[in-house]
Amino acid sequence: MKFSRTTGAGSALINVMIAAAEKAGRSLVRSFGEIEKLQVARKGPADFVTEADRRSEEIIYTELQKARPKYGFLMEERGAVLGEDISNTWIVDPLDGTLNFLHGIPHFCVSVALERDKKIFAGVIYEPISDQMFWAESGKGAFLNGQRIRVSSRRKLTDSVFATGIPFIGREGHAEFLKELESVMAVTAGVRRFGSAALDLAYLAAGRYEGYWERNLNSWDIAAGLAIVREAGGFVSDFNGNDKALKSGDIVAANIELHSQFLKILNP
Image (cartoon, rainbow, N blue to C red; front, side):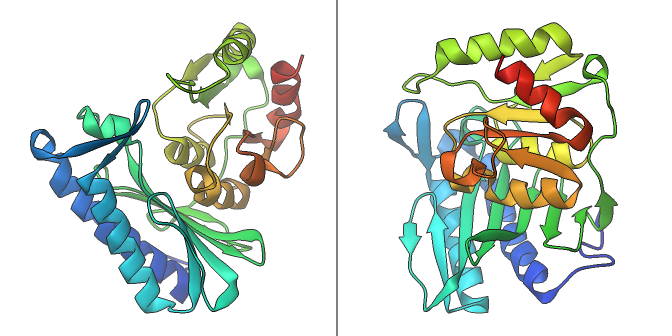
């Protein structure tokens, strides 16, 4: 089923981002149908790069560079690309949920954000298998397939579901995470771990979760999600309650009613 992507408050900028994400998403879906044929290169412990990943990034780079030739880039595979316009930088994850993708699990996405004057200005997260397009632009609200979305309004932890990411082999913080998980499980309705930080934030913005936490992330994992959650009325911080999640890679996000309670659970 197709939707009007930018019903209501869309802009030329958002249209550019959506077009790039959709084109990359179509490429990923084709590759997802031929997983057994993919050539996979080992980039690090449990951290893979595929032909599909690189192809998706090349599509996004080409589309965005064509539309805004002076903007810079920060991309997972390509790294930093300086632009003439130092105020604007695209932050791109061409395939968030790579491990899911490689295992045939249909939960992955394309994430594109625009950082303007050192602040996240707009974000697009596209889940191609389900054709869900999440987007937000500063001051214009958050949307899913053209319909306005808001974070959940639940106020009680016992009624709330939280999402997280689990540190895997080669990553630090296993013992710390287990303590956090035990604390959250003890006072909430449940915890979910689906393997895509970007989609966790998008789902939070749509009211599907009440909160989300994770440590040691990269900026391209969360940049677009930050924009979408904030425009959906959510609150995002690091573990100290400061607005430094993008820089630190440590993120705590929730609706306004639960954020402070959530922080106290994670920092007993």
